[in-house]
Image 1 (cartoon, rainbow over the protein chains, first blue to last red):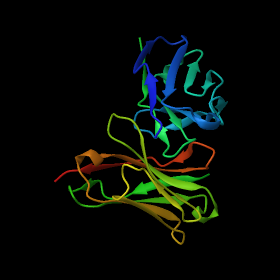
Image 2 (cartoon, rainbow over the protein chains, first blue to last red):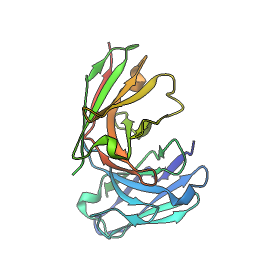
Image 3 (cartoon, one colour):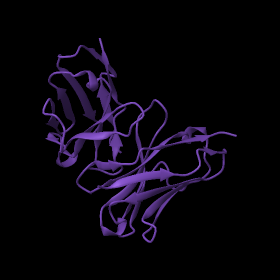
Image 4 (tube, one colour):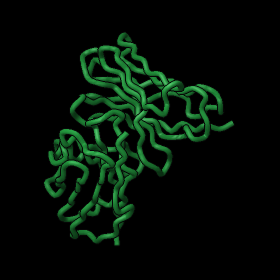
Length: 108
Length: 118
């Protein structure tokens, strides 16, 4: 199974700043089948990015994804107050589908 | 608009079987896609559990094989999860979801908290 390691575990930033979240895979993720999810308290995760860099429908363009192979990045260009929640990466190229442990974005 | 809704007991005793159902509205589960279960222990990360294809094919997380089964009832437009011999480690929010083979989990239920305790 592919293990995904996210860093940092917690990221402290201020609204308006840029956030860079990392996701590293234990082996290459085939076909760039890497997704990023956002999870707000008490809610199910929702897809932000799939295919490593494609924004899901309705996702603001301040969210962007990049990377390939074993290293992937989610960038939030200008943080809004509602962005300070938890983010997970997930690979869906090799069964079983696996998730990273999450990065919590908190207000500095 | 596809909607998924989990249902089942919120409390299960250790060594018993956890049984959950995901009722789908807005789409016929026999019409396509994969239908799966994911869980999240409180305050922790997400773990894929099992999936069933509209054709009836199934796949289980290797660490849970032998304890888990998934099935679907197209007449009721729902699919179900059974997890046997539960322990406190199975306490989690259980989500059902829909996805396609080349896409992530696109549609999610709201989740149901299941606590394993005597």
